[in-house]
Image: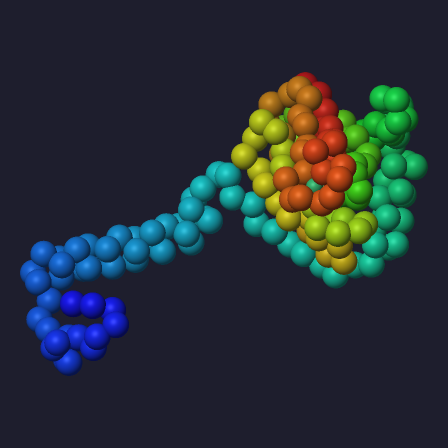
Length: 180
Ligand code: CUA
């Protein structure tokens, strides 16, 4: 057999499948179908899944909505860059801005209360990764992504950007506080 010469048996594709090979093909297919069914199953039954809502929005409109919440509920300023710490009431719509290279503002939430967290980018693609939890979302300019969050533990949570976005990517950090 050589890759240069034509195969000696011209109808090589029309040979009977060995029983062992056939068994493996059937097993692999069955496993693929099980895995496929697990996707919708975990979407309903899995606690870690996020059902996203998304709307088109301009960066300017999104920034204005975020600023309105910041103006209304800022309780103090923090860090050398003077980030507002915003503590909106439970049930609020809260807007997090991703941009080169920061997450803005810092939110202070209450444990076991639900908030509608909006995510959007002012420039290009960022990734919202909430540490140490397994939450990982794309943050895309022009879209307002909404997730319902209910923090079930208190403390300080770090947001890192996990979508490479340029020279300051590794410094693109944010914070969320959760109070008891
Ligand atoms: Cu933003 Cu990487």
